[in-house]
Image (cartoon, rainbow, N blue to C red; front, top):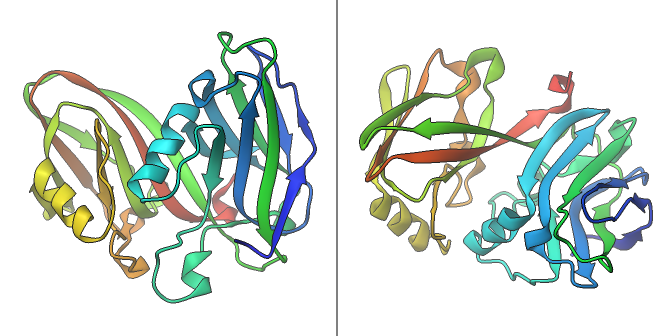
Length: 265
């Protein structure tokens, strides 16, 4: 646990069919945010979550998927608690690596999370926010999670070009939500980085005590805890992701970057 654990009271508009707004005002370094759900409210009722630093979106996810990510990491999952975790607890190199992408609120003018509550949520829905945080830090890096959707129309190979150069960055992992993917190839500047079947990727993850989840392929560049293995797409001109599928599919992709806050503009 972090050195401080406290309720965050500025949480407004917890209403079915609305967007709840959580404002974090403590000048601290936020490691984890816990959203406690009750009154019939469940993770299935939580849709898109957006974190905004100085008004700029830096983090996106979905309430139904955050628990899946925790399960992949082998972390305890509670059906009534939705945790947004910015740390990397299994990394090597001590605190500097472990907390590399925690959010330094002290360096921001504002830090807000917008949480979609679906209209199907019950009228008595309750959400309370708590946070684990530490003293202010000069560390300017944060976890930046981006998402995109793309069709995979071909039975067989489907090619996707990932952002590079000024639009690229240091990638910890890529979450590929597409149940029909059977193999993955990743090339940077035409050089193969990954060429493996889904089963081989999952075998390597299990060897590192990770828990592959149904319907997702994770390209985890730091699965052994070594932050030096992050994929740097800022330093290449081309990054090709080739997905082999057993049937036509639609990809929902999330990319986790470690990014400098100066790029939030």
